[in-house]
Amino acid sequence: MEVDREFKIVTLGEGRVGKTSLAMRYVRGQFNEKEQSTTNANFLEKNIRINETSIKLNIWDTAGQERFRALAPNYYREAKGALLVYDITDKESFWKVVSWVEELKMQADKDISFVIAGNKCDLELDRQIPKEQAIAYAKQIGAAHYSTSAKSGMGVNECFEEIAKLILDKESRSGSPIRSSKARSRVIVKNQEEVVKKKKSGGCC
Amino acid sequence: MADSQAILDRAVAGRNIVRLKKICIDEGLKTNENRQKVWPLLLKIYDSTNFMSNWSTGEIKCKDSDIIGLDVNRSLFGLDLTDAYTEEERIAKRVDLSNIINAVFKFKPEFHYSQGFHSLCTTFLLVGDQDLGFKMSYQCAQLFVRDSLRKSFDEALVPSLMLFYTLLRKLDKELADKIEGYYRFEDELSVPMFCLSWVIAWLGHDIKEYSKVCRVYDFFLSTHSLAPLYFAVNIVLSQKEIVMETNEIHELHHRCEEIVDSLDIDKICTQSYNLMKKYPPRELIKEGTKPIPKDSPAVLYNNEIEEVFRHDKADEVKTIGLGLVLAAFSTLAIIYSD
Image (cartoon, rainbow over all chains, first blue to last red; front, side, top):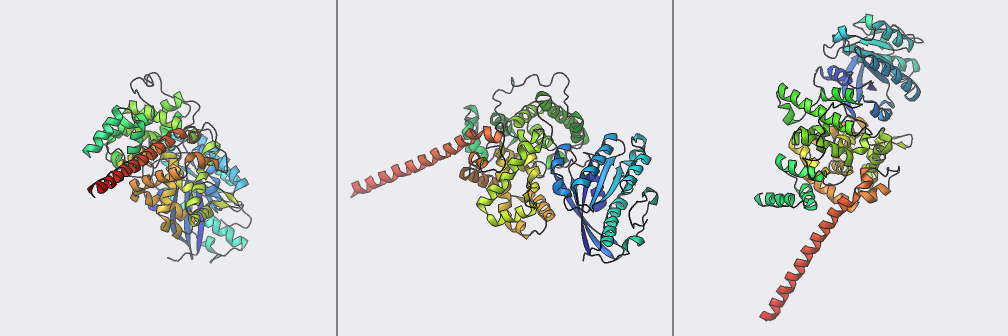
């Protein structure tokens, strides 16, 4: 398959919030309760199409334990998009997302696009982070927020595709090579309610 | 086989550690029973009944209990042996594993749990039982993998990982250029991350066959804490074509993940040992770009592997000596017969 664009995406977040499960669900359509912990990083790729543009997503799924954080720059370097994952049943994991955003703003590519995923939404009863709070935070930093469940599949495709769209969007505005400058306008977002209206100069949606 | 088993048993009975190490390096221990006898000796547990005998009494908790719990709950999968477990067996083993890991950090509060260490403890549990599994894990943390259990990887693990490049460059500049090219960003060389889990978890996270994992441990436990690096260098050397064909860093990671399962482990062990003899760890660490702390196992335990090298040399001398004596006899015989 011929690919028009290739984007590097990195998943970040505290240990066992479900980064690997989200990536595996997205790329392989599988969910494994028994997903082993990640030591280092997994690499996955997926070809998608957003309107006329065929895109290859190179996804680096990183280890979440704090001590691996020192190695993370090697993975987010040159990444165009970051999926920041927290577990809705674990307050601390949300604050970890906040600290990742701070780090990425300082250290990563200045055009990096963020999408925040509140994972494990199948465990709604144990929720510790109010959805409104997470959405408000996402809005504040110009990111999209998705409620996801790697287990049920909810919101998984959408959050990854949103990253691809955001990257395409940014490229089209900055004049980088891209096939269809209208790509974004024709994208169908399935769970619109989850998408925070982004404050971006010239952004649509 | 019977002969080599008899030699091994004699070496165990006589506590001939150097001989045992040579067996581990050259052919591996083959069976779980052998490993239960030999690994404790390699880990300096000479009297396993009295060593840390009260470790399992009282509450077994530590500062890292939360994350350990989460890792344990998704462990005991991924090996042929553990994949065959029933759910009950798996749950029972997880209780053992949790106790083992928590106890290591309870009794070694200065160490910090690192994801990947649970993989090492899993292997020790599978080879022994909970008691021996703890004792071996505890000693392994102290004698071999301490550098990945420090507060930060930057203290010692990063400097030792950089030696991968130093070593590879001595053997194959083209391959070293290729791999360094993937990890050089704006003139700064970062660690070779494709082999990080090989070094931290001794390939237990990567190889699917339990017997192969154990074979790797036979080698690592009988040599030196930097053995995983020598091993990693030999893996890429043996797969040079594949590595040279890659164009992107993610391809390198991907291919390296794929190749570990089909490696000829015996061969890599032999090659790695020969490489250690040629470029001993003691000399290699002197060439590092970043200093390695003095209390690193990489610095502390060089005498032990060098003793094995000397034993090899003595064997060679004996062989040559015997050859010379035989040659002299046959010459005399020829002279007399004339």
